[in-house]
Amino acid sequence: MADGEFTEMLRGIRERGEQVTVQDLLGRYRPVKSKRERSSGRALRSVARLMADVGELPPMLIEGFLPDRSLFLLAGKPKAGKSFLALDIADAVCEGRPVLGRFRVNRAGPVVYLGMEDGEIEIVKRLRQRGVGDEDGRRLYYITDSFILTDPDNMAEFRSEVQRMAPSLIVIDTAAEALGIRDWLNRSEIIDKVGPIRRLAREICSVLLVAHNRKADGDGGDEIAGSNAFAGAVDGWISAQRVERMANGNRRMFLRIEGRGGVRGEIVAEMDTTTLGFNVVSHEQLDAEVLDAQLGSVRAWRQPRIVRIQDAIGDLGDGATVSAITDATGLTRMAVWRLLKELVKSGDVEEAGSEVGDGRGRRGPVYRMMR
Image 1 (cartoon, rainbow, N blue to C red):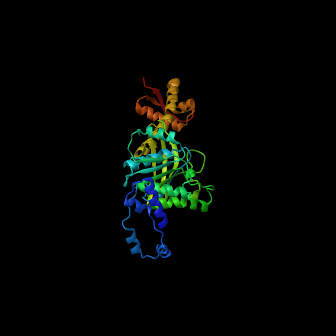
Image 2: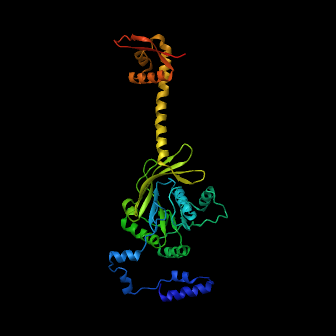
């Protein structure tokens, strides 16, 4: 900002009767640097000087999940639940609660949410479903108008607004609405449009940019729209690789996290479709569910076959040998043999008498149902 522009800014403040602090004025005032001053920012520095200039590294905004002062994508197929997840993350950051019930928030604070796609009625519906009342005091702020954020005038106005709030997180929902990218495969255009958002993240706070994965068959869709060009222009991403609808009506998102600052991993987050809240599903629970499913598959295979064997034993009477039961049921001899051993062990079937010939040169016990 040139000195003349600063004078005009002061005149405007007086005319509007604004109450501003010295710190606010200093935050708005950016004196124009001379050519010599501007070039000094590119001066060579030793690693010791660089480290001293940077000082103590900030902790992650969300421990193990989202670095501070970073631009991350939240990506997934359309209708995968990205906006529900983005709202859950935003709500946890502004309230200081663990994200997804697990990941600690290191710097709770105001969150600015640009809800450009869903409309204010749908947004309010979701907030009420999450238990947010009309007089709620949480520091979650919305912009519901759709505008091209990468337009210089729009960006300057938006930056000025959020700087005064000192937010911990900005959510932009969605990239398609906010960035004004025409060709998602044009690397040059993507870098040009993403650049201002990345600078915003570096200078003010982390930005979570909601983006669509490519359209693909099934519930997955594992490529971010724009692919390498878009993914390479950001610091990392949280990508919904797969979505499952549960029997109880809930929705599970299988998330892969990749990014700078050592962020990497795969988690499963389940959304309660009644409260719209998310929680991480533990590996122990997932393993138990897999085991239950396997046992269920075994039971589903065994039960009808056991009934067929029991019916065959009843029909065959004194001739219920393994071979006869195999012929009567159409099962394999090995399957009949194994299931008969289980039935004998459980006491439902007994071996009756000594071995008898089966007419094929083989001998075996006769089986009968226990009364």
